[in-house]
Length: 626
Image 1 (cartoon, rainbow, N blue to C red):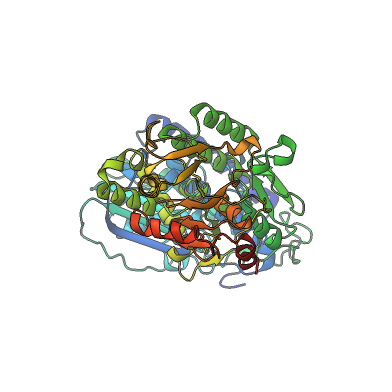
Image 2 (image 1 turned 30 degrees about the horizontal axis):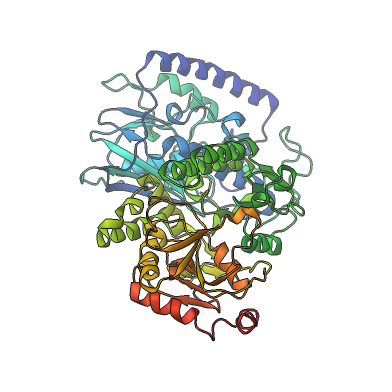
């Protein structure tokens, strides 16, 4: 072993240690009841934009296969703790307490087994690994010039840890704490990337940086002496115990786990602990999805492995809901959110097909779905493939930290959509009604933007979305549905709904000028008199009637479109399509692309699509299918 020779732990020594620790826990509990150190509030970024101190430490240090489960457990514990820490505001003169802020680490709170250092040994314990977080907080508190009210160094040095530089702070519920205060109000940003823990203190204005030199670990003392010294540490003028590194010392012995110490006679040793365990070095993938599309269903079937996890809204086959009928065979675990999904469906039905209230209800439903399916994300899940609708909520709640993830995208980012709708509302003020009726909350926009920036890959068949993510996008082929032969005619089908964002104004102008018959398939959002002066007929798509009968062209000049299923049905039947790039079909044969709001270009495209050459469905279908 490195340094001084480590002694083999005994049951008696462990019993004495636990007895003293229990007394100290009781003492600290009484102190907390009488004290004024409380849990601090969490706030959005707001005015705290000036970074004053930052710490970045790697998540994955131990490379041995046998240690992987505890490494993953540590990362899971960090995810749980950060939910109570990220966004925390420490008012000037207020004391921050690690344990008061995150609470006790229990299984019920989502914590799992990670590596814990105690009495010189690294062994599995619920909440193990949180010292990486306390180390990071101690480092940023020092660099931000905070007063360290309480801090304890580790009793052993874990290779590669902050203890090697004397900038560590161990914690143990609830008697070994990390506490500090600042003369200026600070906000903590703490998050995980795929491989890094980032802690950052921010202020509303620049403050003088304090450069803290690296120090060497102190010497001498034993764990029991160190614990006993907690009650006898001197106090500051304010009465708080100052338990700093200068009053503590550690044995210069490297810490070892049961996989590396070689003490097989130790009472803590588990048979076979030193042998390699069966594990997946790359971990499991969890597929968390919402509504089914043929493209994404095919992708999951082709890429998932037997050890992977599938999270779906509900069992579509059992509940006779085709939109949720994902194939469930071949997964190690299938999780559902049946109650949340049924509640969402009931709310949507009550609110009707369109409108701001319905859109907000969809967001609320996606949040409930994400919260439920997140329960399937065990520490063994190291990669996710997640539907875009669930993405911002999983990101906000920290479930994507310490993992890589791909995004199944069906629409443009909210930030892009908002900008596009605002620009259109200014360009076409007479159409502003349905262009400005709904905006997602700003926190949701920012959460989605951050998550998309961190995503490993963007997976989509939508051609416009692909252009948004050069170098990271994976193109899927659109799936054409089964063709439904229909008699071609001279009518123009408009999938709708009748709304400015779907290009209804431009199509109405062309229809009046060219005396076109419009087949209406969607809801009327612009009023019953919108199509006055235009020949129209309405077809209910769920009536069983073939809506393509008598249609010569399908037109969707939309500003935004994330579900072009009816356009795909038209192409499968050999009916030409005129659509904007926003519909995502730019490279499909049979599609003519026009810009949103360009009335003359739209008229020319419709005339070309309706020409005698384009009306030959057999020729067009051959081109589509190759």
